[in-house]
Length: 88
Image 1 (cartoon, one colour):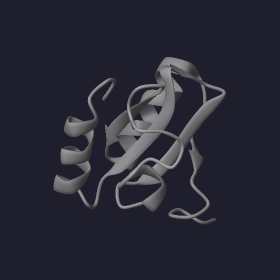
Image 2 (cartoon, helix red, strand yellow; image 1 turned 90 degrees about the vertical axis):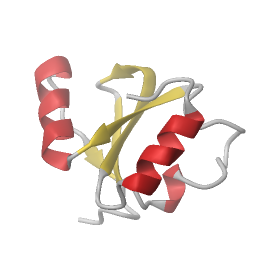
Image 3 (tube, one colour; image 1 turned 60 degrees about the vertical axis):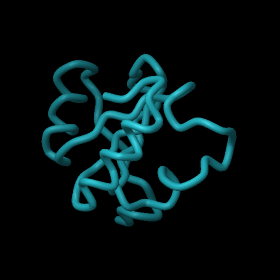
């Protein structure tokens, strides 16, 4: 989980091109749980809405099934796949 650590987060996605990123509020909440591939353009490069990736939002990184299980166990919720990198 990356909070206030853009350099660590960006290094993780560079090292794990086959990984997944759960984008959520700074304190994870069931109302916003967006799942992305680590290569998704909306969660890498230069932030569109500001200058930081992990200031207002946290990034939880790992394998897809692990992230989905974590959300189910801790929040009793399901993730929402990104429409750009994980189209249904």
